[in-house]
Image (cartoon, rainbow, N blue to C red; front, side, top):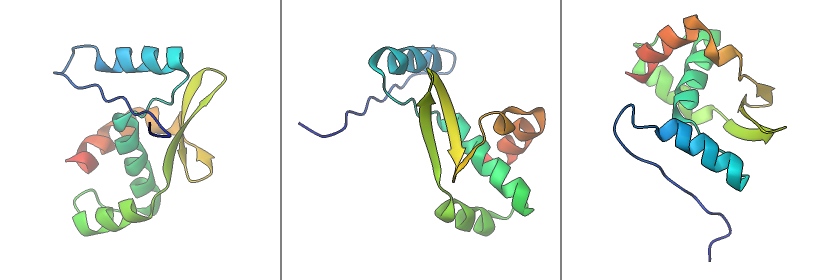
Length: 104
């Protein structure tokens, strides 16, 4: 038996994957890895470094060096960029717009 259990949830847009994964992680005391939050964190890091979302080489290099991780603290999922909790910083309207450009 593996040391860690990984549960992947897949399905079409709007089918409730995020809701299910959050509830399941909370119930099982697992950490929920939100891929959308990962993209948002990359966008935040790129913004802070002044990287153009069209500069694919710079984004690739950035991603290779980033440390993104998730923690459950007091029942809440938190997103960390290195040693900084960026859970709120990645949820701004500006990051939403930039995330679309970076993820493309």
